[in-house]
Image (cartoon, rainbow, N blue to C red; front, top):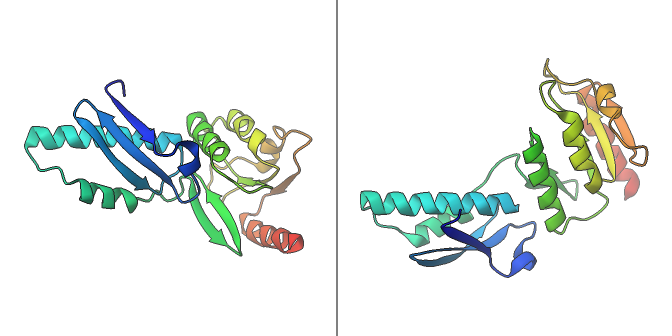
Length: 193
């Protein structure tokens, strides 16, 4: 916002796969630092807006502001499927349910600003009502290979349609049967070890 500022404590070096450290500053003072496990600059912006709204509401309703409780709640925050880091078969997996161009751009920016190990493989599928061509264009600069899938949802895009957007230099695999994706990925990972 124009009337407050969220600062990443330590700059880019504190933003990593475990989250980020943030401070909040407005006309009433500086608060924090707060540890937030959510990744991405957009999450820092969301934190700033929520912090501002919470402080304003607290003042308006004359409810005591408890910074240690706020800090604890923030440290325990989770958003399943949004830049979510999971470990599986000894590998880090980043799960993200971006469903529009702005969400995909935020995801890609977070990948760029976070120390992500390469190679980076994308496993994607889209609904027919999404601008998947534009979303894929946003994603391609940060991935090394892509697996195109069709989910069981009746509005899922045929992965052959998705493949026409894949640049020739990015290896791609297509799966029409969603149940075969996981075994394929596990086999690929075993072949790399």
